[in-house]
Length: 551
Image (tube, rainbow, N blue to C red):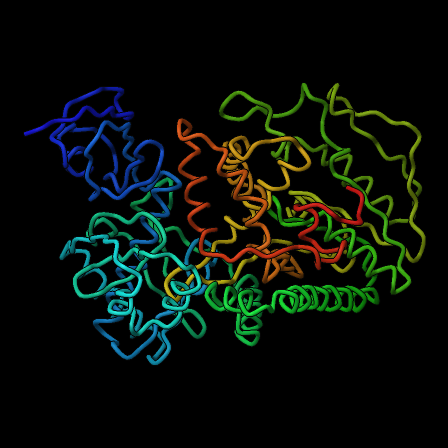
């Protein structure tokens, strides 16, 4: 039999394999030692199914569920197994996986009962499917033939028709078909760890911890986040843009201008509601507004717009930057890689910061420090701050919701805000466009425009950014008095035209090529949207340019 040479990055060895061998067969041949089962592979730095076959020389790296992409593969495969279980138990019901929630995924079953009994039946059937170890196969079919597979899924068909590609990908497991927009595990037996719990009018699909895939990742407190997602999802449903196919159809029909106006009006309504809520708290002596949120949530523009909104009520907001309270560079903590950890709470002089806040709120005049980022030292230049009776302090920073901030200030004097681009648009009933991908696209575009960073550099840093968020921001999000969704219904279509050329520049010789390719594949489903009608005060202007705010 004809052979071909491949290079395995896991052990650095080159070996000859039979041409046409599957990636799973190659992994077994190599007898690689790994704590957890391999779930997918990078082939020439692009994520592929283990069922894919190799016919020419390739560089291969096998990954498990502890890898970022491996965790996504695990989740997608769980969605498919859940879909099969629903079809088996409730063939007339419609499964809709709506959004991530905490560390799990919220879904509803339209046409079936909610509650613990249904959750238990679904969980039992999914475990039976895992034990059956059903193979998952992927085929490419002619677009016109897709109706044979998706006859009962109008959202999927609409997306296929607005995408305008000649061929369509179909994933098959036993008697069910779908497409999960990315790599899947080779079989249903690959995803044994999960849980299903009743939650409000639906259910929560709990997934394994990425760093410990044999243990369920508990969702934690998620009620406030769920409320924000639910309200935004309801808006999208009313506006008939709850999925990409519907969004594309409106753009094709020449309704892009309406989308932009409605999206901006929706966000302005949130600002108005927030301002009213803050003013209601003024009677209780509110003096301090703390704002936090993950990277590329639009916190800077949000803070500036909130400043303007509050001035309409006669308030005089003053901004206090936590960046000026960094400890000197030689006192900055060191991370596990031996580098300065500027995102650690210990990198901030909490004692001085909290002292300054307390004295300002007490009515004292306070000299405010500055920080020289080049020399790594704090200094004073005579700048001072004193609050008037109509003043409120606005603080924006990654640690703003941490209970260690302003811990001595009475609760009634503080208002905490969590800001994030909580994306609610779905690909179809089984897949959604993730909040994390939305923020990454924003950051890629912004970093290119304002920081002279390539998409490769931004993607390379993203893992570290996310680890910092998981440690310093997400654990405290439910401490917020108000959660603000900074996403706009049209923004992915708008980011597309800026992000695509940047992502195409990522070379296939780099590990980050896989992430760039995945994002390009996702963007390919969106019709592009021009930004000429976006107002200069829009949050999206912070990333694509053209803002009237000075950053």
